[in-house]
Each structure stands twice: as structure tokens, then as C-alpha cells.
Image (cartoon, rainbow, N blue to C red):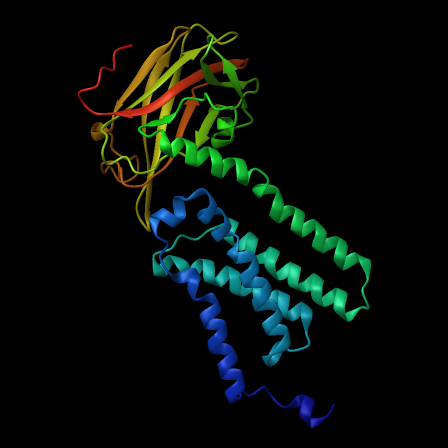
Length: 321
């Protein structure tokens, strides 16, 4: 083996410039994200996908410069490792560690790897097929983004009404929990509600939304209309969970339990009375991350609940059933 190949890699001035540019490339991972950006349905969602672009670029830079130059597999592996290390290091900078973000880092590194494979092997079809699969995996969670943005903006205009399910697309704001099935159903001539059905044996079926208005500081009471419908039992306990973010390392839940039956009733939750489960602090109303309704399953069999008119009011509002 030649002496040139045996010589250790020594960074040059150009190499140091490349390292500085890489540091700048990764710098956004350690900067605080404004609440308005994080909660915005478009900015927050697309901003999250920056991980894919960032680590695709990082992989190509590692492959083109420095000790990994011309070594595509090593460049991809190094990029994936760097992604994992940055996720762990983010906790030191006030950001949260996220397996989902690392998954996106891997997607970006894999896309760059497919490009290098295709370029170095005279345009083979296999790397193109793999790249297409990765792109589908990136696109699939975004397929409802236009509807989500439209419905989130419509819901924001209705505040302090959070959701009344009258818009045909409003269902996109809510997600299933534990294989529950969601439907927007008519409950009167001009009224609609969210119906949650579950036929399995999971203990906590229900629904959750992270796309509602998130700043509740000007209100003090949450109201939700709810009822059981056939083939549910005559009565069943249900819990309303509110997830908040008080700080970079302080994300916590508060909950309130109710007993539902087959008549409509208004679930009334005075927000000032709530305390979070882990830290025992008041709810951080300036940043409510998610709102969930879960059923307390007592036995196997079908369950169904309808939810309507999720809204915030002041203390003087009439909240009778």
C-alpha cells in the first residue's frame, strides 16, 4: 500500500472551512423554536421536514470532502450517527429528544445514499426505486396537509369555539387512539358531531387533537358536549386530557374524569382547578399542545361516544347541562 494511502488525514484550511459550514448547517437543530412556529399547521409541519433536507446535504458534504470522501456507505453511516448524537445533545440546549426527528435524519441520509449509488453505478434502477419508496414515506404523513391547514385556520377564526364539527373537513383535526374509528355524523337537522367507535379490547380508546387553538390564557373554563350511543353500556367513565408545554423540558398532562350516559351532557372543566400529573403545577394555558378524550373500558365489546361543541368560556358563562 502506498505511503500516500497510509498517511493519516490532516485537516487543511479548506477542510476547516467545511467543518465550520457543517456546524452552521446543524446549528438550527439547537436553536429555540418560537411557539407560533411550532404550533402553526404549515410552518410547524414543513419545518419539521427540514431534517430530511439537512441530513441529505450533510451526507453529500461528508462524501465529497474530508476523511470520508469517496466512501458513500461511510458517509451515510456517519450522517445517521451524527443525527442520533444531535438528538441526544438537543436536550442540553433546551430542545427535546425526538425519535421521529432521527427517523427523518435517516430518511435524508438514505436519499443521499440512493443518489450516490445511482450516480456511481451508471443509472441503475434499484437506487431510484429505493429513493421513490423513501419519498413516498416522506410524503405520506403530509398527504392531508392542505386540508389540515385550511381547517386549522377555520377553527382559529371560530375561537373561543375550538371545534363544532360543522365543516365537512373538520375530522382531519382529530386522530384515532388505539384503533378507534372516527366519523362525522349528523345529530340533528343542521348539527354534526364527532363519533368515536371502538370494537377491540384496548383499555383507553378515544380521540385526540393537536391542531386546535393553543393559547387559552384569556379563558378559564373548557366545555365539551358528549354522550354515549348504542351499542355502548348504559354508563361509562371518560377522561378529558389536556397536554401543555410550560417550557423546553416541561411538557405535562392534566386530566378530569366524568361519567357519560346516553343523554347529552356538558362536561365542564375549570382550568384553574387543574394540576398536571407529573409536576403538580397549574396548566400552562399559553401553550396547550393537545386535547384528548379517552373512554375507560371495563369489559370487551363495542363502545361509541359522540362529542360536539368543544369550546372555551369565561367564568360567568352559563355551563348548565
